[in-house]
Image (cartoon, rainbow, N blue to C red; front, side):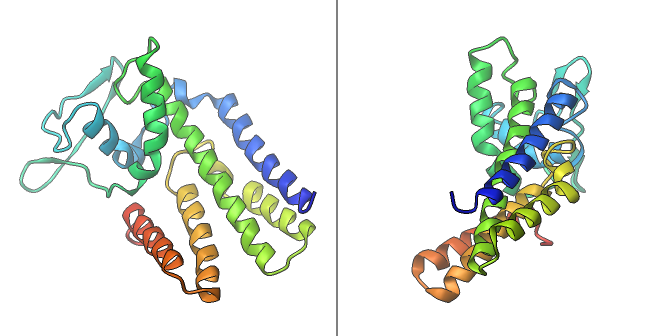
Length: 217
């Protein structure tokens, strides 16, 4: 199989993330996964699809005896979500799977119980895989050998903070941005090869999504 070592390298990185996740079991902890900045990135989904309260009029949400959400108040005294909705867009497929699972199980359908946290962790690994796969395609375009691409993927996947952001501190935006930029660079190369409407639209959508996740990027 062509690029066999590269495929093995990607599998090793993904397995490392799964091992860390199942060792830490952060989805079972009240103060992990949906916390700090992630609370804001994720807030659009439960606010819109569970509580029908995108304006956050109900500011006293309480999901269990240990877990509270603390909302930001603007100068007018209104509760707001202080981040853009880009991350919620990427979280959305996994949120809906988790919500469906919660609806047929004994877990609370509140957007913050274990299924929601678990699938947010899975989302980080999924986008890591997509990012590494497009990185592979970029390096293949420049005719790097299988062994060199495999080493590069192992160094980036295991030797940088990307590993932590894909597991221990998931689902922070870093791995999602890595994924989108990998796709963006790949389609930039394709655009220079063939300036089609399709490639232009894909680049525009990617740039817009990157901006919605972190405008500073």
